[in-house]
Amino acid sequence: RVPESMVAWAQQFQDAMMMYNCAIREVKTKLEVLNDELSVRNQRNPIEMIKYRIKQPHSIIEKLKRKGFPLTLQSMTENLDDIAGVRVICSFVDDIYALAGMMMRQDDVHVLQIKDYIRNPKDNGYRSYHIIAEVPVYFSDQKSFIRVEIQIRTIAMDFWASLDHELKYKKEIPDAEEISEELRACADIIADTDEKMLAIRRRIEQKENER
Ligand code: 0O2
Image (cartoon, rainbow, N blue to C red; front, side, top):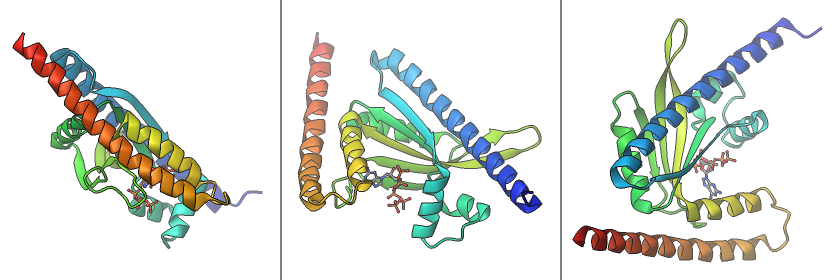
């Protein structure tokens, strides 16, 4: 027989995951509304794609252990920012800052932290703009503010991060260090290309406006 305490714990965990899923939906809707409005106004979509995920239980446990936090539900909700994750992929860097600003100015979005890894890339070359925020979700008998991590990045930054993520989970590769170096160099090339692509888009827009 499964102990009752364990059944209760499983129920609470399931409830928590349901709430994180609902928060993802709220954030996704906010982003889709902004994308719709901006695409009508500017004749192009600032958002290429929205991805989202709930952190898997084994990743939650691994992160709590790695950071030295207790393995409890309370500790999970208090200490982990990215159980609910929404990833927004844009074509251009200026779209990232425009969208981030619009999200953060919404008065029901409680911003807890900003991590601008575009202006301040990580040592390995990682670039992305992270907003850690709490958004309200209305349930049958209560309103809860649920934490979500919103990662906003360009297509190129996302391409880079996917490959880097693969390397992170394949630590046994013998020449991992050399690959890291090459990835680091690619990150700089990508940042340079993102900058150039934005400059080209702006030139095209300027020419359009002059016509
Ligand atoms: P996953 O598999 O995406 O869920 P940390 O202690 O550095 O792991 P912290 O303190 O929560 O994480 O904050 P940070 O560094 O802003 O990282 C949060 C998330 O950003 C990570 O979640 C990744 O999704 C992404 N990220 C941060 N740094 C890197 C990086 O160097 N490479 C890649 N590919 N992604 C990164 P998780 O839990 O690490 O992973």
